[in-house]
Image (cartoon, rainbow, N blue to C red):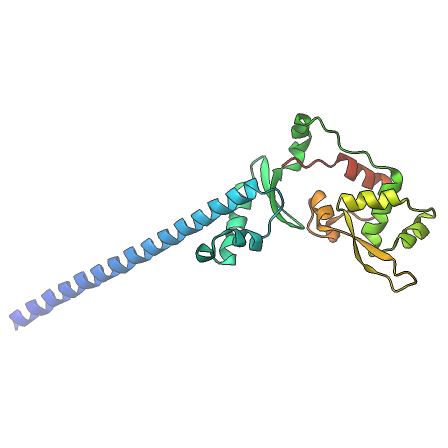
Length: 224
């Protein structure tokens, strides 16, 4: 009887040792997998950060994904997670990763832009009141035709004003009105939204007097 008790105790100890070894093996494997996963994400984050740092234009998560070779492409969600992590890491720095209408881009934070702009000799262009009024009407009443703009302003719109806005890629023809001659309908572009650091028209200030828009346009600086 005593011998049986001893054997049972020995078996119990042996079972505990086996269970402990199994638990340590599982834990070790899990930790290795987690570590590997973190390393992979860190690699993706570094690649995404490097691409965005040298990119000459804002890029979307899909565009970033397309930079990866086909056989090495991560999940789109991994790209988006990397972007969010980078945004957080730069939150306290003078440079930020900003989402605009066309995607994400690195840029100087707004409160520091006037200091950085002193490095550049080129002065921001001056725009006429007529151009700014035209831009404001297109922005807040789009889509509009040239005739619509003239009706609102009460004066004719110079072809050079429309051409300047088209060349700046702030406006584009978004369609044609069903009217004699099928005149073009003008609307703003993603480049226009990018200039103001917003992702949609709803983020722009409410329509006020033209002086406010003039200050926004002429004082806007975006060194990147």
